[in-house]
Length: 271
Length: 274
Image 1: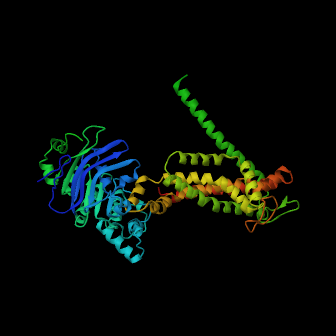
Image 2 (image 1 turned 180 degrees about the horizontal axis):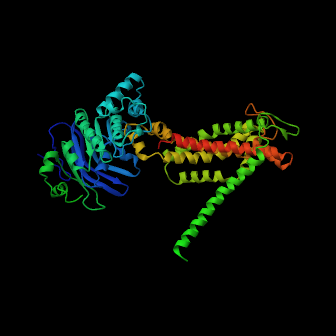
Image 3 (image 1 turned 180 degrees about the vertical axis):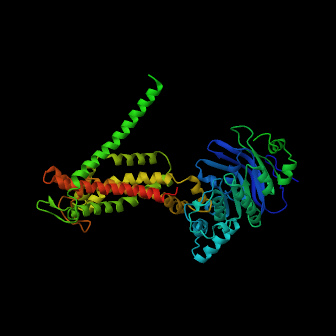
């Protein structure tokens, strides 16, 4: 097996790489949040980011679809390639990038519209207007998000009337409707009920046939259940930038971590 | 003094102040109601004045007031909403924006008699629109603009950040996010602001006195002059020709404004989703 330590990247997987990151650093104004992150994220697999609160894993996740661009005064340096193309290159429009790299947030954020319109939002942005085509996208996406059975008779109801867990699955359906290549999930299960957590974990294992998933989670059992690869982030000292401590196959990282700090974290000695 | 007595005393003072506020409102409404209800009848509402315009009904003045308010809403709402969208979503939040905001607040506090004078000089005289519905509507728009703009800005800011992120995360542009997510979500509060500003326009006297004229007319085109309810009420009372009719007009005016305020509350309660 191979691991990543500090700035040296060694591929931990034999399959194709979807996202290649080399020496990525990130600043919020004058504060450097990340330093020297290097990692290869495998295509059509699930990669989990774990680590204590404030260790920069969500910040890093938002670098992958350039969501951080929306926060004034932020800056990224280093290399971030998706399918070998630099996503921070001069010709790249973040709007197009986010169509390919979807995102699920910690707080379910359906739009105050009908369930149908929520899912059809992305396809409509791309100019799809035909009712039949939208109908089939909506149905297919809701099925893939494990929500179809619960909502198929109430598609006209406001998305905000659903339970928290259903709302989160609606958000997943909404993202799947634009057929992203990469799906970023920022603690998607931390604010919802256990039944929905189960359904989300189930759907994750189904959709990774076609989508590369990156999930940030505080829950190490969840990381162990759903992911093929795990990356451990740590901000060792307050005020210092966070770094990627260890990256490897999930079963190996959890059973025989190489770094002492990883071992301390996964055995619950801190964090 | 005993702590408990102090507590009770403080509570009593606060309670008294609250009661006084409500009592003042109640007294005004009751006074107008008691004095005005006697003359209110379908004839009073739906017929023309006659004699020296002191007898008979007040129908043309109601039409003039509603006409000019609607026209002013049509003029001010699009401008104010677009300005607010720019300020809240697009403008770099710095000195320029805070200056614009300060200007809007100052505009809102310009005495309406001054705004009337300005409207008279600009719309009636310089632009040659004469004493007319359109002159009055434009002058009223100046008063309504800052109210609608600030209401819209606050409504837009109340739309949660993570809801916008959801839209951006699906590959929406800024304009798509603003027009398809933010504005619909903010719409109930925006409409509330528009309705409240319309209530303000209905009750406005000084501005329309300068710009609309006093002739009792049934306005048809925007270039027609007319006499709004407030001016009619003023003339009836101050010239002492028909005090009961003045109270009747006052009562209808209050009912109209109350209707605006209640519908604003209703809209907010029934359509607010965020």
